[in-house]
Length: 255
Image (tube, rainbow, N blue to C red; front, side, top):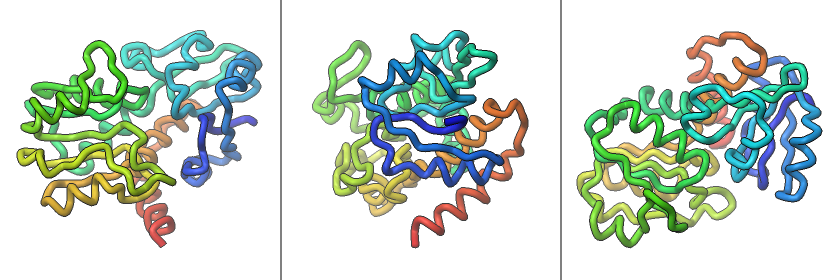
């Protein structure tokens, strides 16, 4: 493999379609078990790869040089092999920022709820904080420092303005699942879900039914891929390509 994606379960991935529209290379989808990952990373017989669930933090010990934003976020989703040294980046940050701005979702001074505490959550929280949100509350099923439970969320934080799902709940094939019932969140104006398969998750569908803005993760996926290709090939690509690929892909997958 020269270019491609690694992760644990990748049958849902649209990344091959996107990368091969953005650049002239073959992009391979390579699922790896937790046991296979160390050998793959130690050999690093690739030119550049993307990393997805659940390895965005697991790969960090294998990285020789992390750029400042990846270091600050604490997660890597893009790795480039330069003369045998591995360079780590995080394009989820830029992809999520594009998604917010393109959909007119203003984070400044807002109370924001982030569902999930994995690699994508770290990039999303960095955007939320850098865009000067009033508060960023992280909710997860696994207890951790600075993370609250869903029970505490429902007891104390139903007054949030924006909800962002970074958990895998609702992702294909378990499309009937939703991480949260939105009916209690009467002040919420926008729900952003980083899941892109299905194109409309149960969570974003409910958001729209309740009159909230509901945005799925396909735009973020295309945008972060565009930024990843820039690192892969040391080039610049105009942001205008993102919307064209997004619309084409949405139409194909929706049919």
